[in-house]
Length: 274
Image (cartoon, rainbow, N blue to C red; front, side):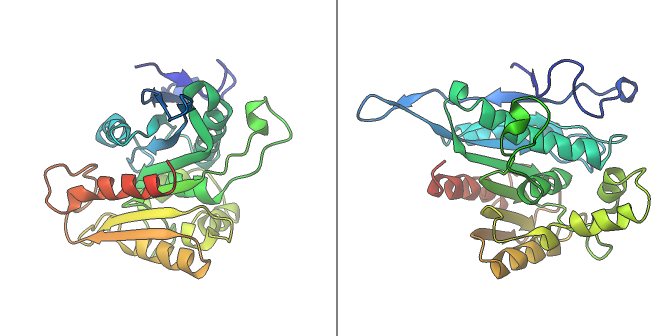
């Protein structure tokens, strides 16, 4: 599979060769083109997949296998190789925003509807997807042509996500890695700003939330409180809490009940026109 850098060689913002990580890239998983009754090629929806890993690594089982699963539903996907510690918030947020811009800018060549781009993430990757769905803009005034494009996703799928950065229910390792090196008072301001339940507005895109009730790594209150904030702002949402599964199982192929979550998410996206 081809890995495609989101920025031209050497222009990735905040890039530090000494950190031993490649420049940010995506791996496309594109479904074959189909035609409608008038022999016109039908555009597909698309999902940008963000694996979990506490902003310390990226869990492989939450990356390409998940991207390939959504292909079965006729949805193209891009697995995002975002940066993690020792990179912090500045680089990591730049990666998710750029991924949405990049896919939208290149939508035509991948036969993707530019108004059907979703972000999907697990655990800390769920926090990244949540940042993408709440911390966006309509396009930047500087940068290259891609930077002029909106980075607002059209939907978000959050899987056992880290939503809050406050002490009550956060995953402290994810918070520590995301905010490493950021001094007060800015660090405190970012805890507030990047806690998804506080960042929901009337412009937030529709959200699908999935969690396991016995998750003791990232408590289900992360999803429950996010759902409450979405409901308060009248944002379309779907929420599923399964009784077991713990944390970090990805597709949960062998766990009865819980393994239904990706099918529920895919069908939700299809109802949104993906």
